[in-house]
Length: 356
Image (cartoon, rainbow, N blue to C red; front, side, top):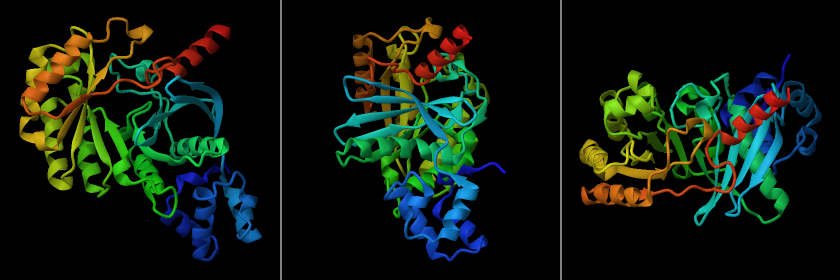
């Protein structure tokens, strides 16, 4: 019988599992406390849990499914971790420092099938979803790294924007969110968590119905179907009209602001014309809309794209502002390391192919 990560269980799931295996209900709180408050590295360190329960946990679960392969550190404090999974696959996790706290960007899939033409994550096609435990464990590994530094720092924010499309791994994503948000454990506030999607409209409806108060970000990157389809093939399945209809449902149901990610590609989507179109697209939703303009991180395999000139980014920003759209420019973290999402993983896989 293969063992799974215990971090994949929500508190309710852990409680039910322990009761089904003959344990008392209060054991769940004990185990949960050891996992997320004291952050043990072995089950037998849970010294107020009886031996039968420890043996049961050891027989069925593991605490470690990720092994750190590479760690890069930027001059701005950003740290990028390359983790090896039990099946040998590689994933990336990023720790970023901001004035409001420490944010971790997590990966949800091994590879990505969305196929955005500018993105390093999609250079290697999806081979599988990550389990909820593997996603939670990324946070735990980063937090344990912080614990080892002895500065009493904690992960305060999470962005689900790493490799993969989170809504394409929906059930595991939701379990992950419930684990990290649980106030008995890591207690990372829902409003400190952001999930990004490339625009799977049917899943936006489902996400709205979960009742989770986490933030939603949509990778838009173009204001019209012709351009968006050219740079994001997902637009063929979920064109802007269908996407915006799901957004209307989300806003009606949740009444929370949505962030629209817009990567700035030189002479592709950065003209005044696109800025005006974007402002028009969001006009009726502007009170619950924020546009995040993102200067492009170049990727060798996507050399048809270049970062927009600073003047073009500024003009785009001013056009949106002039039309009443809240917006800002997000300059990248980790510019002196492999800043683009998926870039470090892609490079390591290439190296191994060359060596092999």
